[in-house]
Image (cartoon, rainbow, N blue to C red):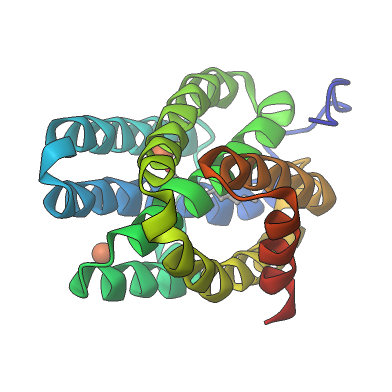
Length: 230
Ligand code: Y39
Ligand code: FE
Ligand code: FE
Ligand code: FE
């Protein structure tokens, strides 16, 4: 949002840049892999939307391939162990919800929280990315809006019945996002991405999504505050 001015030239070949990239690139690759799995599981929970969800899962696996190519292009080896650890809590919460058949929680985690996180990160990354990664990321971020929209539409249609579970899932999972952001703040800055900008873009997308599915602005404030409190 706020990075409309081209950033000063970044040297994509320094050890500092490549070291930070080995973690951020891994996070994105792992995130896309988990998103792929999550949409396949959502397809099991929502048989009526199965075809569409399988289509979304395939988009996620294409994204993963794209970002793997970005790492190879910079001759960076992604630190996948770091990335698995990074996603572990959200991943576990998704798995637990899936095990209990809690489709609303699964949708909140993947289609709202993770998609909004991706949208914020990719939009902030694009202006400061190397030319190869920029092209790839521009294509990917368009798809992420489609994924967010899927969650919004379903949750809007089932709003009254989902409200309580959404509140609970928000309270459990939003604080995890802030922890994740704190963990990558330094690496993100090396790539030209400021944490403040990431938080702002995330909250704009997430708040808009919650508004679209039916929460009032007063409720939005409360949901956002719950995230911060825990
Ligand atoms: O739906 C998706 O494709 C999301 C899985 C991808 C996750 C992206 C996570 C981005 C976090 C990057 C943090 C960099 C500051
Ligand atoms: Fe897994
Ligand atoms: Fe994706
Ligand atoms: Fe996605």
